[in-house]
Amino acid sequence: MKKYLKYILIISIFSFFQSCGKNTNQNDLEKINLKGDVIFVGFDEGGKLSKDIWEFDNNGNFIRTIEYIDYENLIILYETSFTRDTTNKLITENKHCFFNYERQPIFPITKKYNYLNDKLSTITYQTMTGDDVSEKYKYENDNLVEIKEVFYSKNQDFRSSISTTNFFYNKKNNLDSTKQITVYEDGAIGGKNTKIYLPNGLLKSDENYLNNFDENKSLENFTVSLREYKYNDNNDLVEEKVTDLKKNEVTQSINYNYIYDNKNNWIEKTKISNDSKDQDVVKRKIIYKGENYTEFIAKYDLFILTYKSSSKELDRSSIKLDEESTSVPVFQSQDNENTVSNNTPQQQEKRKCYDCNGTGQCSKCSKPQRVRYKQGESPHDHNEIRQGMIVCHQCGGNLMDFGSDKNKSCYLCKASGWLNCRECNSNGNGQHIGQCQTCKGTGYRN
Image 1 (cartoon, rainbow, N blue to C red):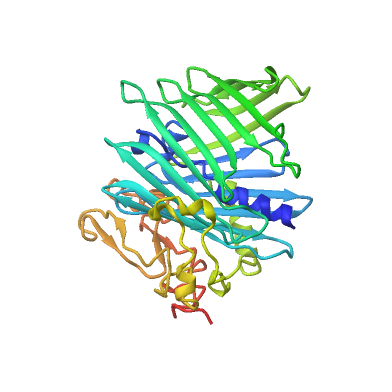
Image 2 (image 1 turned 90 degrees about the vertical axis):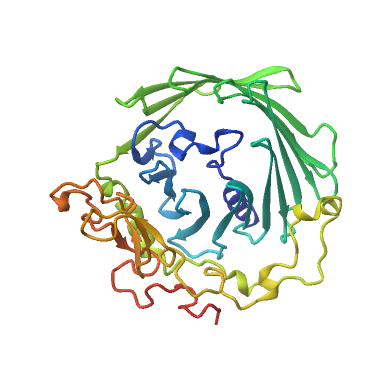
């Protein structure tokens, strides 16, 4: 079970949607090199256990991602949804786990994004194992220059740590390199990482030092590897070389071949490695705006609906924290702003509902949402709240350009601009519409 929890922790703290450097104005499609009005991507890795699903809104940003793991009919599904404000800034990222078998309960994850002068300033959350994570962002002359991540563990299986990443720019003010160092609570260095970037922003090389910390604390028990990358004209990776710098020898060479659609997005990728006779083939189903992807996602939505009530997610506010615990030594030398405090909101208000932060309102449909109606039908351009309803993620609530045949304008909302809220009104007849489904609108746990 400890190994399994470690796997969950690694998944929960990994986020590949995070942008860095000057490319803060890119949407999610641009960050992952998808071209055109993509609204859906489904991965097929030729019989592999894990399947991934990505959904995008009309602005090219993530609505939802799904990781579906099927091991001999034992299924785990991770669903991550994204909430943005009216300026498309990411506000929250919510990750839930659903499964079809009995197992130890886990925490849901809610990442909260905070901004200062329209720049990302902090990200805070608790991992699925209940540990605290805080990321602080620092800027100079509009450039991101530092990210400091503090990981404070309440679990004896993991050590608290601070990871600092510094960003460096060339004379043309383009991102040139990043350097990261991770220090554990006892002062030991856990790892170092240096990334070098090409002028177009693509990663050129990645040098990684990792301390493996065996029981004998051997000085030889570390790895230093270098990964080097080459790309084609579509900015897709075509060659990857791995060098063991301790032995000064190439340990792996990988080549990638692609088949593209008419938008220059790859729909089939073949991975050929020198250390394996097998070829790994990954296929992608890409759906563009105006197309229907219901049939490709129905299986996953049905699984969530079926197992939502039976999936066991821990109640964070029911966990009794050790009020006498103190900060680990490595934090004492840090600026107080960068330290995750032990005096968490759960200690101060133990019975307040974590999911709604004590408001009693549904987190998805209780906030104003931007809708644009056709002239003569409603106010031309405004924010609106409808209990138990959310703005359609297919058309984005933008009804300005719809044609005369409204039933064909948007296959999901039928040109109404609204859908039933998946959280509190998924079947259209919810018992606590507009209210937090965990505390039933009270704002407190029972």
